[in-house]
Length: 375
Image (tube, rainbow, N blue to C red):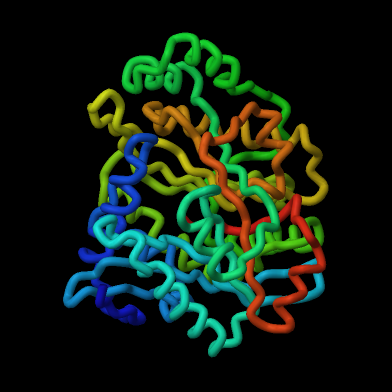
């Protein structure tokens, strides 16, 4: 098949990109629940998720004028063992129109991205493919990516609302719903020290410092930068303006004695699942950028997350599950609150591109890490 891979440039063809992602991710994953990609969601993704520094690493495959594939590289700085700064591309949204699967499209796009990354002296590439799927095999068998860890995606059934959706909308077996009830309770704590409130612009420097403190706590951690954090939070109302209620973005902190003790972001999005040939759309909550001050004990961390779950129940009572995909720096906290593993399994794969990048092999496996996940 004749096709051409090229770097996408502004103005990005959002409608064409959304069409490829819809065919790849929505139609492929709708059985278990998927974001209904459209031009609005593509606008949100480019305006909020993709940083300016990453826009040089967006590639597309064309057959004539038709876009048939996409690959995104999110440029980030990573701290290794609290001593070595590395530049990476975090791969996401590798998509190929199903009509053109198994014809070398994804392989060609990744080859172009690696060529560009090598030229720009990127130290290593990383990705979080789903285990056993084509992306996993492509990375490991054709490009010599190595597996360094599992990457758990955790979810919390949101009490009776979550059980109701499982029972009535998704027609889940009553026995399984009963089992799910064992994991749905959100504990109520009254001894949380400090005040949980909306994050404000003035908090951002302290938030960035708090998150960056994980560089000394886990061996592999994303380096947060103030300007990028500010940009990411600049258009926080965009989800709601594009999709209406309950879609929205929230950022909360725990403040005690004028000090930021904890932070977490929450995005509420609509997902659609197909059950017994019927499409069911329901809101879910997605937690990101969870961070805690070093002097907080596990009980206080659990209290904070419990408070956040209850806030979600209050502001968006129709949310039936809460997900977190970046949790390996605080796994025990979420497990204690009976977050359960998603049925899909993901892995952390990396590939060095420079001699400096080879330093990631100091560790054969990474049990703990604080790395952003891009779908």
